[in-house]
Amino acid sequence: MVTDRSRLHIAVQKSGRLFEQSRDLLKGAGLKLQGGKNALTARAENFPLDVMFVRDDDIPTFVADGVCELGICGQNVLEEYALGQAARRVRTVTNLGFGRCTLKIAAPDGVVYKTEMLAGQRIATSYPRLLAHFLAERAIEAEIVPMKGAVELAPRLGIAKFICDLVSTGATLEANGLAAVETVLASEAVLVRTLKPMAPALAERADALLTRIDGVIATQESKYIVLNAPKAALIEIARILPGAEAPTVVPLAGRPGHYAVQAVCQESVFWETLEKLKAAGASAILVMPIEKMML
Ligand code: ATP
Ligand code: ZN
Image (cartoon, rainbow, N blue to C red; front, side, top):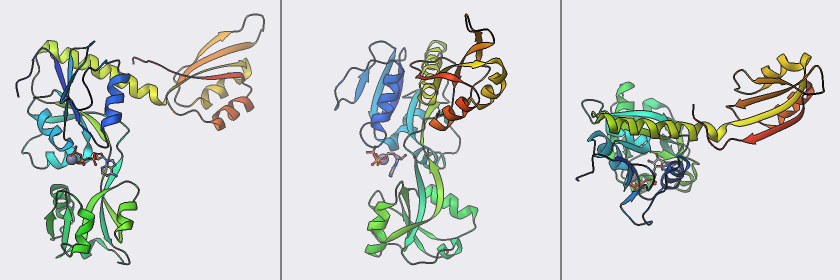
């Protein structure tokens, strides 16, 4: 594929579990994307970036080869790819907090499971390298049966006794008479960057985009809190504010000994937190969403 080297390229899943949140993340970073649902690429109108929509399994390869400087994929896909490579060619920049799932060993219902019982058994999976790594670490020899999909059917079809598959709720396993028994890898979506050298101007653009993306991630949880408090309560209030660094404290006009406290809280603010603040002496507490943030 020939790509324009003056623009950045990000590989994103074309359709599937990661598509919507990947697109929302880019939109949140202020990118206006052109191109319809079925397009293979989308051009950002207001940033030198093209989005390439591909199968999630191809994303590490695209990024490793430098066809795309950036990509969004699951850690499961990334690690499976990396285990097949002699050297790392892709770097994880940040965890994205979506696409959470777990690669698990599942056994037929009723089996009283112990890891050692995998020895000599057939295990079906779409993640043969991750499974081989898991088994090797435990010095277990078993036969890995690679499958592209519908892994949960393998035991019923007599192809394998155990499976190693992605699980989020466990409902699919349950429907097939299986139960998750051991974790191989906990995964979420990550933003990855190529280790191939980039032209300085392009690297600068990548850094600018990553700063924006960090800002989007930071604002998702963060809130801006404003409250009033008497001087005696300030220390306790600062202690309660979740994930806030050095709140701003300003005297209230016309109310000697009273202050307005303002802080960015980088952790969730729950009702319980507000109740604690009130009990500590705070009043007129406001919690506001943060639209943009640059750290
Ligand atoms: P593609 O057509 O891109 O190859 P796919 O069928 O392999 O798609 P999806 O099922 O859309 O992939 O899953 C994409 C990613 O979403 C997974 O690799 C994983 O990181 C994540 N994911 C989150 N929850 C689950 C789940 N319950 N089952 C499978 N994947 C999950
Ligand atoms: Zn896939």
